[in-house]
Amino acid sequence: MPRTERRTGRQPAPGSRFLSQVLAENIKAWRGWNHLSQGELADRMNTLGHRWSHATVSAVETWQRTVSVDELWGLAAVLGVAVPDLLDPANRAEEVDFGGIIPVPARVASWWMRGRVILRLEGRDHKGNLTNDWTLRRVEGHDDAFNEARMETAKKGAGRWVEAMESRHQEPEEGGRREGPDS
Image (cartoon, rainbow, N blue to C red; front, side, top):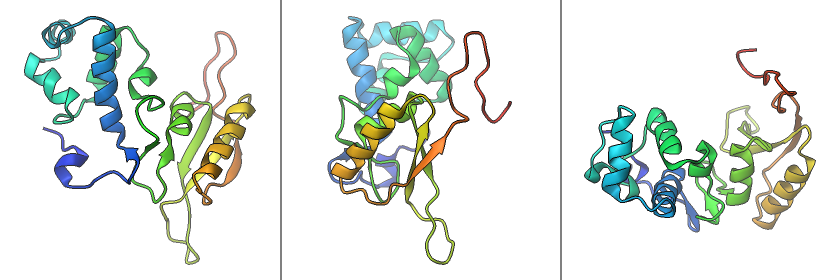
């Protein structure tokens, strides 16, 4: 079974949640919204080829079991939501702890997973060693999200955030391809 942060003994920063906690809470909330029992969700996941039981759903929802990427996509299909909806921390946490020095404000994490801003771990210390500092990058066409994200991080006292322009992650034109690592 994949290890969760809980099993490694690490706790999220005060006032924040791990993304795996957010996912567990969102799965439970979307299951409730769809009026599905844990058994019904398990049955639907089994239909997609995932070997889930009532106990699996319970373990996922109580953060005792992680979800694979394949299962994440299956859950999104079964629950009728987009994958980012299952990962979105906007209503579940003040901040999300990804392991950096500074937890990410929930709204910024939400914009990040929806492609409206880019976060990159790329801080360097005076010796050039990688640090846990996040760089906040603007996505072309989403200046509003970037400006709000900059204000949100400033409110949290996250002075290590750096502004930079990121234009290669813009949405494709109608019928076009999105630029990325495989283009």
